[in-house]
Length: 219
Image (cartoon, rainbow, N blue to C red; front, side):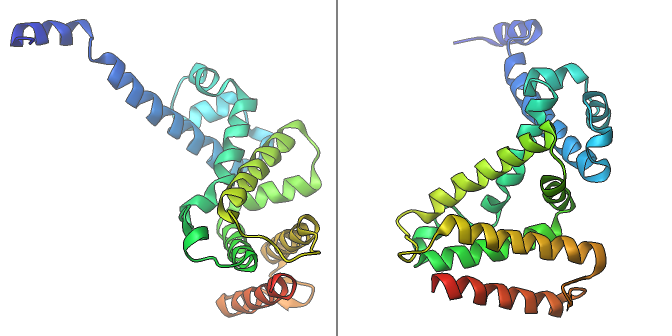
């Protein structure tokens, strides 16, 4: 058992430093990721770089290389983080407890995706980039986000199966594409194909129509 003198010696020699470093690394990684997301949301990829992120995060740029492997790794981390937004909105066990059918799952996920796009300017930017730009950074971001969402959906789906004869890949692609277009059009001009989308009642109408579409296919 260490006496007080021995403890004092250990503290002076830095024996407790690794624990502090671990905590500091975790905090620094979160600060870097948050700064990168905010910078990307505000300015896009045009001014997105290691130096700019480091300045925003208030850290040495070498830490970005150390923790994320550079700009490409940081972009992938942002994509994975954005792809995991749904975990904060639905508990992992919800699929087994409350979602009785595949239609229940897709209705819930569709409405959450609609809400997330409306509330998240960075996600709207990313969706717009995905359909309008073909750069390496956009591809990395899109692939990481899609992978994270796909893994979540697989976990949530569990034993739930879609109706026979339904091409879920094609149907779900059309559902999510329509949500994206609806939200991006509303952000740009407050309407989409004649549907006014300016207040809560307007969006309630859109959400109701979305539910009917999903249920029309999946029951």
